[in-house]
Image (cartoon, rainbow, N blue to C red; front, side, top):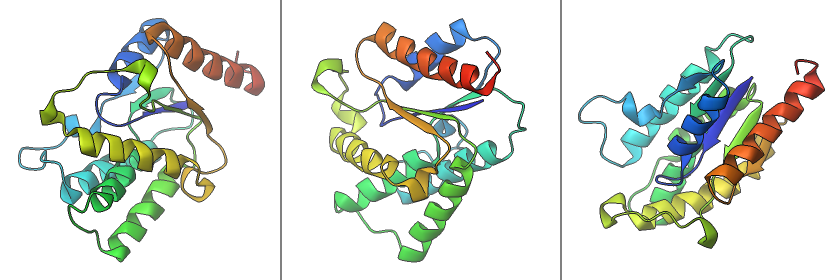
Amino acid sequence: MRIVVSGTHASGKSTLIADFLGLHPGFDHLPDPFEVLGEGQDDPGPASFLAQLTISARRLVALRADEHVIAERGPLDFLAYLRAWEDLGRGSVPAEVLGRAEAVSADAMRDVDVVATLPLNAHDRIWVHDEEDPALRSAMDAALLEIYDDRDLRGDRATVIELAGDREARLTALAAAVGSLYTASGLG
């Protein structure tokens, strides 16, 4: 089973994953690709987003069919950051680069079973410092929700769920989605 927890920065992904792994120790954790980047590639911008998209896509494609993983972010997160960057007028990404990023992302999402998105909303207020670039955070959130509506990018296989509420509510909803897939596949 392949789960991708998706959302803008400071949306609760790490907390949800830690809680999920506490209940499901048989899953491996694929950390945020940001943690894998080397020095000099960690400044927000197209080069960093493309590097993280590549990391997240490669590791999803490289998984064996029998592996159970929960990934902190998938390639579509970084596609959303690229679109948000442009939407905010901070620069442009050449169309051919964006097209290639879309193709790589769609290919990597082909075998994902569950995508848990953590959209920003008024009820789940998570305070962030101005250093976290609230404008980029909000623009990425909007772009990500549009991307997950696009079957050409997310594929037909993944069950996409939007999680809201407190920590327990989010964990319960994710566990229910995973449990129903286990039952439907005869694994549970």
